[in-house]
Image (cartoon, rainbow, N blue to C red; front, top):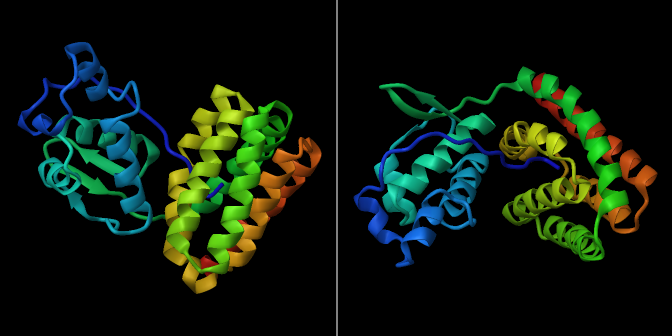
Amino acid sequence: MLGMGGGASARLPAADAGDDLKPKTPRKSRSRVAKGEDGTLTDRAYRELEEMIVTLQLSPGTVLSEQALAVRLKIGRTPIREALQRLARDGLVVIMPRRGIMVSEINLRLQLRLLEVRRELERLMASLAAERATPDERREFAEVAESMLAAAAKSDDIAFMRLDQRFNILIATAARNEFARRSMGLMNALSRRFWYQHYQEVADLPLAAKLHAAVAEAVSQKKAKAAATASDRLIDYIEDFARKTLDA
């Protein structure tokens, strides 16, 4: 619940030379791949860049080059460009016309205002997910809860962040409310990056994992009220974490 991705669309130029890295597919499939419609190169570029930004491998203020990213990720420039557009909608990068693309700065006070909205949306989504999740999704929630606790026990922050994103996507899917999902998509990546930047200073990874797991377990057990209560407790922790960071 520390974060989740979003999306954006725009008219793009034709495929460039970097696209020869794409697998050979029929013309229709290749077009869909370039547009990210079936979750291949564009989605892969988005996932990898989002993790690099959230985990500060690409730090705030870094100026990004489509060409350099295409070489680094071994993906053509068109999927990279589309992924950057999605990241701009998430607030993780800023696209400056005729000046380039820059990783956005981290704003502490923005996090506190963001949490006011997240509390209401996440409570709603946790409750809806508990009511609407399929049997397969409930099993996955239980698996995520167990894996989060295991990652925290090993102090594996990267594994925890990946599980957190998996949890966010799962709960948004299980809630089956596209409006709540879109709204959360504009906030969670920023929250995950903020948490990652400061968690070693003031956060408690085992406690964070325990609170996330409580939400996942309640959803897996079809306990809507318990899921909503667990969500509030999680946001209480995240808000307390943000305020401690502000004090520091």
